[in-house]
Length: 143
Length: 433
Image 1 (tube, each protein chain N blue to C red):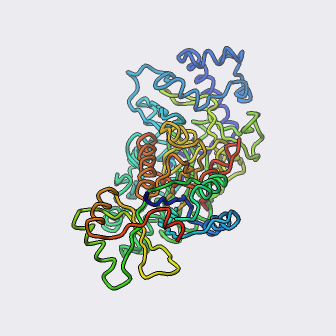
Image 2: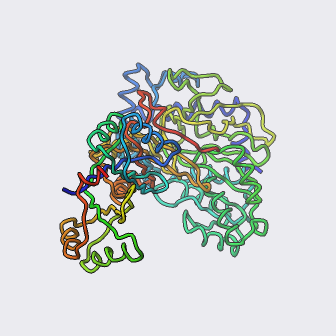
Image 3: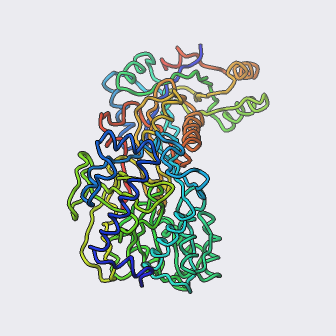
């Protein structure tokens, strides 16, 4: 099972992010990773949290436009060239990375990157062939 | 200077006698030539012979933009199309344009009134008029053009757009009178500055600016930056086009209405009750010399007031104050009339948006910019920015195609726009004129 990411539409205005974090705090939701993509007018907040279902419900109740996207969590060796190796594998297969961001990990030797691919099955195949570890959703949410 | 000394300085009594005679002739003619007017007058129980004084004008029913739409395209023409030598059009409330026609004599009358207007603004036959009003269906370009020729001046029919080339023409051809919208005048100033051309070195002495609302502050800015005297000109295609009223160089204080051709009234915008001169309200015009497209008591939706005090220029014609706003929600964006309802129908036709939207009008670098805010909702949402931007561009394209006006579309958060029954909240006008 791959990783589910929730994304939220936000206007680019002071206080909009704080409103989201307030809702999470009150609902006991822990943010595991996040990235903000923005234009001058709006932003898309992409999040991986410990409880996707609950987070979505809370956000919807507060009137947010929420989407769910399938992303892939990939283990990256924590040394120079670690990320480069993964990107090279993908580039050789012509797999496009739509976006990526880092996952915060409390301990452990390796880093985790979250990837959004245009072609997930092809990406998984390429990563498996190269012996790169992909982390399942359940494992990731509990990290 | 006064172009037509006789008619622009008539004693009020003589002017009113001419107005009454012309009004009676117009009313009789439309009653017999235009079924719409006959029906309306009959419903109101008024016959042409009931118009015995100017006060009787108030007994006649109003004509509105909706009437023009209902009679699209030629239903209100009072002459056979054979006799029509010119047709102009402006955008209307539902995408259907407002169509107006002119006989050869109407075109001559219009040229005379524009020659009067240019003269009031200080133009003479020795002058060169740089006419940057758009040529085409819009009445601005050709209206000024014919007036300038009638006056005997030279006219440069440069029309709108291609601003850098306009600056070069101004520098090389030496025009002395500028005609364009006030916002375009300021845009010209900016582009000239960018190009290192100073208006101080150009030959302009005065300009006629109209077709959109502006203010005394804008006048000061135009005069300071363009080094010329700026006069306001008023008109609307339904009544004729530019040249219905104009400010004089001498006073620059209110626009003289050419009352020998148009009878102005000011009425209460809601009740339609005529208001005494001096009281602000909605301007209503009756044309009394037009042949092809006469209009009886036409509701302009423009808010103004009428002032009969004598003017130092010597004209006895009543002055209307600068237009203070609109009694409906029409916006004028770079000379294009836009009603929020038109935008609403485009939004709803796409079937992708909620009917909650808001229009924000701003003046950015002296050009009007209209931003349409629409609410994001779950079905539209995508976590890829390019998809959301595509949604915005698509609606922008649909609005441009339908209304001929370029807008910016911005997605906003669900339920973030104010819910309101009234239309006031639909439009936020941030222009500081």
